[in-house]
Length: 198
Image 1: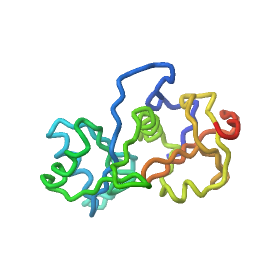
Image 2: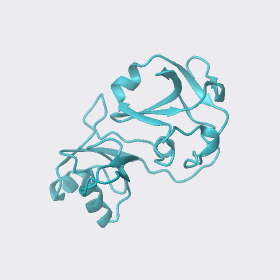
Image 3: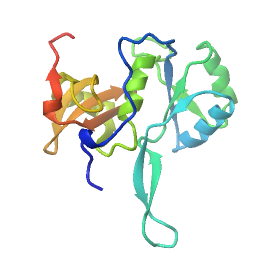
């Protein structure tokens, strides 16, 4: 399937910066042995909101026929959990979970990393599996890519801020969160460069 351009897709809407809504941050959880789906199911049974970045992939069938298009995790062993209780309850959750998991911590201390609601909303928008112009890489690789800070001013991703970089002859806006970097294909002329320090 050819990559879609921003003009012919309708990804999830980006949050409006002037709207004030109740904010509830998110945690980033790391699972093991590709069991993020099982952990998500258990957390949802508890009434907790979760998010796994997904993408479409062509999967082989058991009969050896035509591959089947299905949603699969874009990045294994990563799941986001919306905060609905004090951070100290995470230990109880970890002890009760049928699937071992770890909580990503802040770089400078042992406290859990809390991802602001607005940042998470933008991340979920760029992870829309219906938009085919998206690549997933590690956050270290994403952060190391050369580029300038930009704001998208045209198309369905208007308002998105990130780093504009060139990859395999195409332009992408890079958004990094937790351990994952998302490269969203957006034409260069859809972006404006941000002043240094903004």
